[in-house]
Length: 206
Image (cartoon, rainbow, N blue to C red; front, side, top):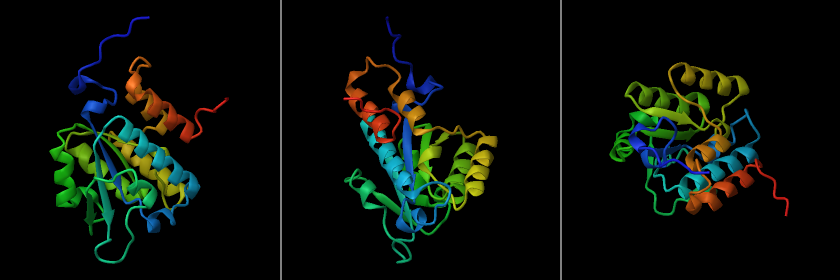
């Protein structure tokens, strides 16, 4: 029962906390209220669990919104803002976050090669930056049960399109296990297990 040494972050094919950045894009009331591919309360629960998981592994978050400064939209939902007290929010007018200079620069400034991403909607504000990041050589991991589209077909078609171009879809449970990797890494175990409780993957029996 001897675990191998941690892999080099730069060479790890699996998602590695030391080589990852999380892009959180457009989790605003207007977008959430127009999601029809999953239950909206479940969507909020899942994205909050995802952000908590990201924080647990000390992965930097690049936060972005659309049209807040223009007055057309509200800010990131308070459940997420509460988890990101010191994180800059990059507001945009571009639908594609990758085409916003400040957001683009912030992602690249982290020096991370693996981009974990959740954005609304799946067919637009998730798909577009994913395709652009892939083209520039990043490994990109959309968290598919923490995002949604205007319809089930829109959501599923967008995931298929991203996957065909090389994106690697993950679920929250898969992401949690991939980041944790070993129960001997005890510092992150409480947050790891809590994320699984939060999404209903584990049942508390006592």
